[in-house]
Amino acid sequence: MEALTADLSDVVGELPRRLLVAGGAGFIGSAFVRLLLAAEGAPQITVLDKLTYAGNLRNLEEVEAHPSFRFVKGDICDLELADKLARECDCIVNFAAESHVDRSILDPDAFIRTDVYGTYSLLEAARRHHHQRFLQVSTDEVYGDVEAPHLSVESDPARPRSPYSASKAGAELQCFAYHATYGLPVLVTRGSNTYGPFQYPEKIVPLFITQALDGGPLPVYGDGGAVRDYLYVDDHALGIALVLARGTAGSAYNLGQGDPPLDGMTVARSVLQLVGRGEELIQHVADRPGHDRRYALDSAQARALGWLPLLDFERGMGRTVDWYQRRRDWWEPIKSGEFLEFYRRNYRPLEGAGTGS
Ligand code: NAD
Ligand code: DAU
Image (tube, rainbow, N blue to C red):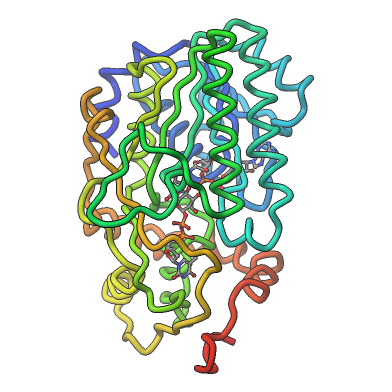
C-alpha cells in the first residue's frame, strides 16, 4: 500500500478538489476512496451510495473520521439528490452499478435502471453544474468476446453480450454523447477483472477463496477455459486516479494488468495452493449462458499517462488470500441469507455429470 500511495502523491495535486464518488461503498470505489484519502493533499470526497447488497460501510471504516470525507446514503437515479450533491462538487467519479454478470442474467432490471438511467442522472447533474470532469468507471466487457491473439484497443467497437455489459456500454454511449453535445469533459475507464480485499464473495476470486477456506466446492463454469486479465484492486484505483488527473476529455482508457490472461482452472488451482487444499474441491458446473471466452486489453494509452500496475497475479493473490484469511469477520456474515439464495438460483449441475447441486 505504501508504494501505491507514494505513486499517487504525484498526481493528487492535479485532481479536482471536490469529488462526488458514486458507488464508493463498493469494492473498487472504496479502494479508490481509501487510496486518495491516504495521500497528502487529498481532495474532499463525498461518497453517494445506495448500499445495495454489494455496498458495505465497513469498507469505509478506515476513512470515516477523515476530515475530507463524508457519506450520503442515496440512489444515483434520484435526480434531485444528484443535482444537490453535484452543486457542492466539481467532479463526479461514477463507480455505482449493478456489477455481477450472473445476476444480470437472472434479473436484468436493476442493471438497466442503475447502470443506464443512473449514469444519465449523474451526467445531467454534472452538466448543470459545469463540472470540471466526469469519470465513468466502465469495463473491458463492453468489447465482448475477443478472439486470440487480438488485444482490445479503445477504438474497437462495443459488442456487449450480457445484460450487464450491454448496460455498461449504454452508459458509456451516454457519456460520449454528453461530451459531443454539451461539451461535458467526460472520461471513461475500461478496467479488467479486478480482485483484492473487500470484494463481495460472488465473483470468482473471493468466492473461490472463501469456499476453499471453508473446505467447500469451487464451482468452475463449464470446462474452466474462459480467460480474463486479472488486475489487483489498488492498481485499478490508481489507474482511475491517473486518468481523472491526466486523461483527455472525450476519451476512453483501457486498464488491464497486461500479463497473458488466465483461465478459470488456473485461478482455482492458484487459490487451492495458497489456501493449502486439494483439487478435489474443484467442481465443474453448468456454464454461464453466453459466456465470453476471452477478454484481453492493450493498455498503452493509460501507460502513456504514467500508469503501471504494481502487482502481478501471484503477488496480488498472495495479499488477497492473506486478507480473507484474516478477515472472516468481514465475509462470514455476508455468506448467509441473500447470498445463499443467489447461490442456489445461480449454480446448476453440469449437464450429464450430476455435479454442482
Ligand atoms: P460493487 O458491486 O462492489 O459495488 C457497486 C457499488 O454501487 C455498491 O456500493 C452499491 O451499493 C452501489 N450502488 C449500486 N446501485 C446503486 C444506485 N442505484 N445508487 C447508488 N449506489 C449504488 O462493484 P465493483 O466491483 O466495485 O465495481 C465498481 C464499478 O467498476 C462498476 O461500475 C463496475 O461495472 C466497474 N468494473 C468492475 C470490475 C470488477 O472486476 N469488479 C472491473 C471493471 C469495471
Ligand atoms: O472484466 C471486467 C468485469 O469482471 C467487470 O466488469 C465485472 O463487474 C466483474 O464482475 C468481472 O466480470 P466477470 O464475469 O469476468 O467476473 P467473474 O468473477 O464473475 O467471472 C470470472 C471468470 O470466472 C468467468 O470466466 C466466469 C468464471 N467463473 C465465475 C464464477 C463467479 C466460474 O468459473 N465460476 C464462478 O463461480
